[in-house]
Amino acid sequence: MVVHRDLKPENLLLDSKHNIKISDFGFSNVMRDGYFLKTSCGSPNYAAPERGLYTFPCHLSALPEDLISKMLVVDPMKRITVGQIREHEWFKIRLPRYLAVPPPHTSQQAKKIDEGILLQVTKMGFNRDQLIESLNNRIQNEATVSYYLLFDNRFHDTTAGYLGGGFQETMVQECLHTSSSDIAIPNRLPAFPNTEKKWALGFESRAHPREIMTEVLKALRDLNVSWKNIGNYNIKCLYLPRRANDQGIVETEGAGTTAVKFEMQLYKTLEEKYLLDLMRVSGPQLQFLDLCADLLVQLRVLGNSN
Image (cartoon, rainbow, N blue to C red; front, side):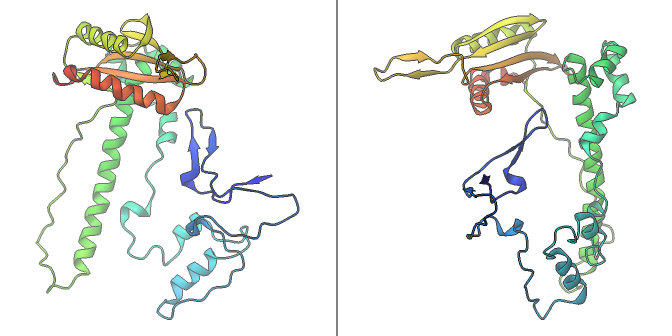
């Protein structure tokens, strides 16, 4: 069997269907059933205790010693869990409020249909029943994309306010624990400015939709991308990378694993702008990202009209 020997969160990949893939087999080795490997390797931060033999520095107090000793128990079934660590007395000392309770999980929130956002989307002209059915069946269309864009904006605004109070409270505590000779504490700490992030998913432009799609099709032609129209301002594309052979002649690779299939959809935003969204259907991820970068370079003239 093949053993990885360096399992950690950084080496676990999650695809769009929530399948876990393991990466980075640089430390892997072959092991026979019933035998043990004799060399130790991997990341020390994630290494499990093998013998449980260790010494504490003399300056440690009883509480951190108690927590560390429970974390270094050899038997994983008896070892302290993350939830128990969060409940440990030493862990709670001077713990900022924004870390005391974890923020709500986005994926759990996304499973519940928000009535407020649902009302906003239906005001855009979408059918309520069809939208609910698409959300329950995880179907991607114009209505569900609008719903999730509004959902993400609300979630980020909520998270920013949730964390902002915790950070401000932490600063107050740190100031109170600092001697008056080191820092002058004002009567009232200034609140953090509520700055709105100016970012968007996809490519934004104020140009006319017909002008945008004309420039997009010209760019696709220059990049040797073939396409077909599947709806209003919605096209399906196929990109076959080219490479030079030994004689220096540029050839198109076969439609195998290197072919990239993706869709492009133009949306109208609430700010009277137009958003061009690209979604990869199949093909290498890095090849798709390189193609997106080349496409943005081709569309830089439209971007200047923002």
